[in-house]
Amino acid sequence: MNRFMVAVTAATLAATTVAADVKVGMITTLSGGGAGLGIDVRDGFMLAIAQSGRDDIEVVIEDDQRKPDIAVQLSDKMIQSERVDVMTGIIWSNLAMAVVPAAVNQNVFYLSPNAGPSPLAGKGCHQNYFNVAWQNDNLHEAAGAHANSAGYTNSFILAPNYPAGTDALTGYKRFFEGELAGEIYTQLGQTDYAAEIAQIRASDADSVFFFLPGGMGISFLKQYADSGIDLPVVGPAFSFDQGILQAVGDAALGVVNTSQWNKDIDNPTNAAFVETFEAEYGRLPSLYASQGFDTANLLLSALDKAEPSDADAFRDALRAAEFDSTRGDFAFGPNHHPVQTIYAREVIKEGDIFTNKIIGTALEAHSDAYAADCKM
Image (cartoon, rainbow, N blue to C red; front, side, top):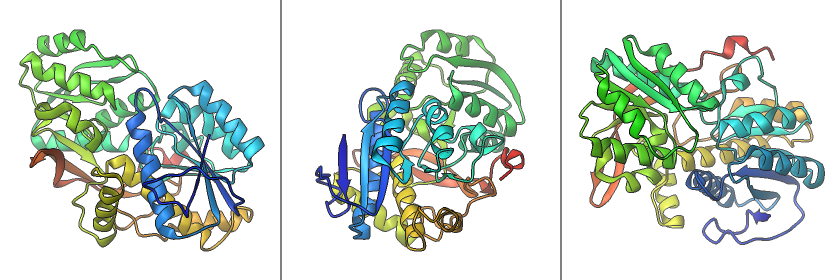
């Protein structure tokens, strides 16, 4: 178990144990497949906490190893033994579904810096659950909208068989106006895509949409590039994010992907975030790092008004979302999920670094399809 104090710089992340007025429990993926995503969320979150200068917040950080049973055990320990006030950190939607409902029903606040499964946005919403990133469908809906504008009419689509994968293809199909040349759910954690690529080759598709986060996306893109298939690819930022692009390399150049954040969003908060993150950690921030940073700043803005022990006041302060986001203006919809602009980005190379640049807006002031089912 790691305990991080705000007085310690984000670069050193020294382990310390102290008394704190507010205790935050972070369960995230720090080892195995997908560890880079959790590390980025952690580092972005801790950068904001360190920059706040507050000495009354303790962050207890645990590695879920991307295993639902481990995440549940850690959550139980944090709530029952650690007595945390707020929880955060989960990357994967299947882990979120295993942890979040039980946590919020024990009067703990949960601030999601990533996973946004559809049940938690709709009928399973809760007054103590806030998602600072997106609802799972959102970036995929934007990809469908971009595919329309690009003139694609027959997409082959694929994603892993877990809640976020289901939401991904649902989101793309909700906005894509063309036909489907094929639809596949792959195994979570799969690395060999020869069979799927063969099906794409045999189809009459004019485009490919895929959601394969982390190492899955790296494997698919490399194998797809080696296949010689020249169909254009569209995807969400999760498969074209900063930490992934260096591993994919030239195979990703020119691919358009969708995101609510990029390092070139023009506002002072984002510019400062990109500069200070790179200075602290020696790498460019990713989408996940920006989400961790925004999640911490939402928390800090609420703590300026109320303590979690005053649940109603603290909840109102979270809803107000009066913080400077890396995305610019930030607001929650009625189900505590963001209403935000989602951009189209293109993978480019700056010197020796693969990165993204914004090339247009895919969806503006976009919320999600499940808010009407949320009764709070």
